[in-house]
Length: 68
Image (cartoon, rainbow, N blue to C red):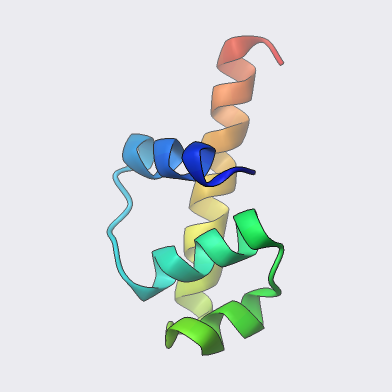
């Protein structure tokens, strides 16, 4: 996922900014492991998992709506 795609999905989901969102960007855009991203940003691992799940779900909904 590109950073532009990530930013668009964050807007669609109205995800709050903060360490969990920063960690989710590292996981989804930079292929960092969630545990490493949590440590790098100071986010709680559960918050990172929730943020990644929320963004991935939004991506799947967008793909389904686009017929992909």
